[in-house]
Length: 259
Image 1: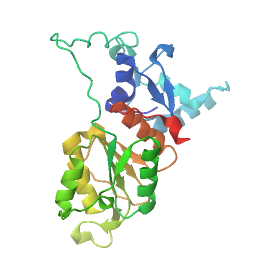
Image 2: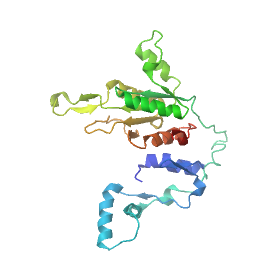
Image 3: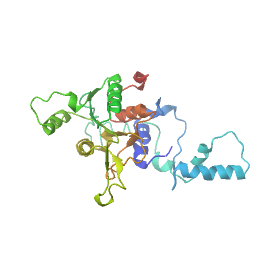
Image 4: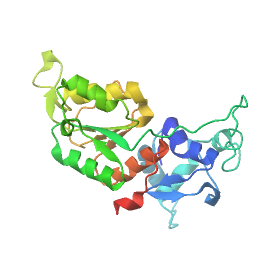
């Protein structure tokens, strides 16, 4: 599995260190059930290493029934001992009272409301909203809320006030490029209001509490300035990725409710 260090820490190291379950491909794994963890740092991702590995196995006449992906773990530098410093949950006891003797309180979501930012794609909007409802969460879609005489910006500010998590839906609704290259270089883009609200929630909630779902289309241009934001394609498995992100932010959600 190829992961930048930030995602590796959030999805695997933190749950292991604090003794909470790790989610892999929709399956919940208890840290105490893990016999061994191996972490390698490589200069190339697995998609670039696999052709090399296949060529080496063919040249060496290796015919063992082991997948090529398994051999990726032998590439690069083993950094397991740098990152795994104790048994599962070894940090949990250290943080019960905090480093200064004060009680540490886990921050939980204020409520079950999830703000859903969308463009013109009704299908993705409705699918995400209904999926959230299956998880006993309440999707907040701005145009479905009463105006009560407020301007759009006032309404947006009011309904985003008590939000602890936001899902941004990027759909290819517009086209754009630099003015001097139009229309030759025009690419599909999300609506400008969607990008604005993406930036708003990153600033308000932090990157770890914003999930971006996007239509996987050719020539669909993503915002270039939001490094570190998790972009998830709206394809098979997006629901489980969403559940993982919600769990990491303290939401008590069960992927079994999606079946």
